[in-house]
Image (cartoon, rainbow over all chains, first blue to last red; front, side, top):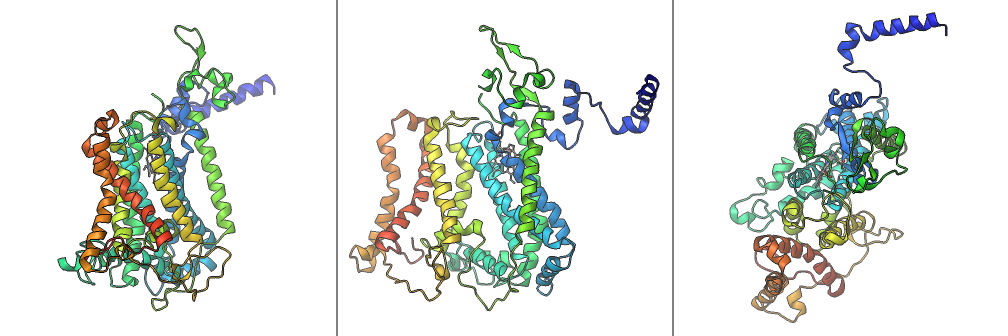
Length: 261
Length: 275
Ligand code: HEM
């Protein structure tokens, strides 16, 4: 390139990168300097979940197995695919099963979306167990991270409940019987179940007990479907998201990723 | 610990990257050695790691979802109970406990204790060592207990529930035909009966004594080791929580073994509950 053309190119670049539109959009340069590396994190709303600097050992795969981050990734996959599914799905006894069939056979990429949702949910259950196992093995629940471990256990419980409430929604044989088996146990709860120790003595009836609180009826039926749908799509995700925010915030407040002192 | 690595093959330790990202090499006071600083820039080192892990997981999930379809059976039919009816796989550990305990224990009390037990771990494990690095030697009791509870009692039960349970919740090897008319002798008997007790009250007493005896390990152990420094440090209240959770967990293998060897059904029968 001639010197003149080179000069021209520089001028045009300058014109663009110093324009109001550019400077208001991109808040720092991209030259590989320590300052820009820090800004790349702290000036980005998504990335600033991270500290600008991390402890060297903390980014090794063999330390964290990335298990917490991958749990979060799988959660995000279920949120995105779940919203797509909601466009097609009606949680009633008449429609639920057929809406899923319609998704499977007629909606473009419907089967794929449903598969992604389901397998990501199962993957999340496995990842969250692995994450807990990793945190246990590195002793990362020890001071000052005790509280974040407790938040984690709540997240684990919510992850299982999310999966369980979603299991009912296809409204097929697999769904209702798995949920029947699962909710049957509530019948046996001490004090609040009809068949549990001291339940009848206290006045729990087959219609009003711990199980019917979950199933909204004596047997798993359409009212249960509606209840599980709301729990699955709104109630539990909102609570779980709030706890995840708390979890991530506490990681930073507890001094970042754990490591030898 | 890791700051003692001077140069390794890991990309974050390459001298070229050190100039900007990983910071300048420092000279350690005293020895004069060059050491790497403990902190490195998240961009690009950490974000890169996350990106790669996320990408691999995402691609894996896509391929899986293209290859295997989510299950969809016949429409829900309340009048046709499939045999076996299995809970979702991640709850099969609980369903498996139903083989050995009544639902109020297996389905309600034990799950609650599992959740609560997990939550109190940081408060009952007062061993300050092994915080932030992998070690077995420095906290073998904690690790073995977790291993037993999680891998043996939870994960293995899930495998049994998924692969080895068929109609009637009977045991089938994977290659065996799921014969729903398989005849399994129901010869389980209660523990006091096995010991020869026939009267109602004698059985009640024997059962109570057995369960009580099982848990009496807790005070006995305390009396034996009360004055050991480790026990002193733990304190009485924490000891009660640790040992209570531990022995309750051990009730499961205890009963499993009694069932397999002696066909024991219940240890203790009362008018209100059976264990
Ligand atoms: C929805 C579920 C969860 C998500 C999305 C999540 C996410 C994360 C992430 C991204 C980290 C950063 C380090 C890493 O990736 O390992 C982390 C750390 C941590 N998590 Fe979780 N987590 C979840 C559940 C749990 C559970 C079940 C536990 C424990 C019972 C737990 C306890 C902790 C603790 C103590 C840390 C700090 C670890 C350290 O500093 O080394 N989390 N979590």
